[in-house]
Amino acid sequence: MITLTNVGSAYDAIAGSRGLGIMDIDFTGITQVLFKVRVNKVGTGTQSWQLWNETDGIEIGVIADGGAAGDNKLLSATFVVSLSGIKTVRVRAKSTTAGDDPVYYGASVLPRVA
Image 1 (tube, rainbow, N blue to C red):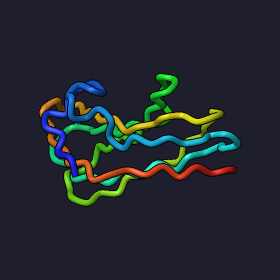
Image 2 (cartoon, rainbow, N blue to C red; image 1 turned 180 degrees about the vertical axis):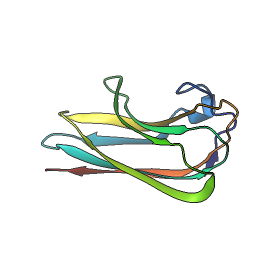
Image 3 (cartoon, one colour; image 1 turned 90 degrees about the vertical axis):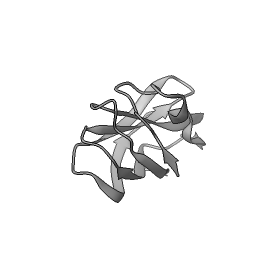
């Protein structure tokens, strides 16, 4: 569990957010990924949880949570991908309210073939 104090209005605005959920995935033959994030939303802004392709420096997808604050929220989305080979991916966070303090419990990525 990681509390992201003053998460910031840009990804990687704080040192503590670098590297959330680092994992290596072989995307060969994969056409979709199911991205899940579990958080305690603390704050009033729209918090964005991004699945970031660290290898190529590109976004795979983002989940924007503009709902009410709450604990143990499970956010999920499926993204279409056209990647190949092994990529290092990680989770990044930001908020429209720079002072938000969400608690990040963890994330998972499920590769799928459509």
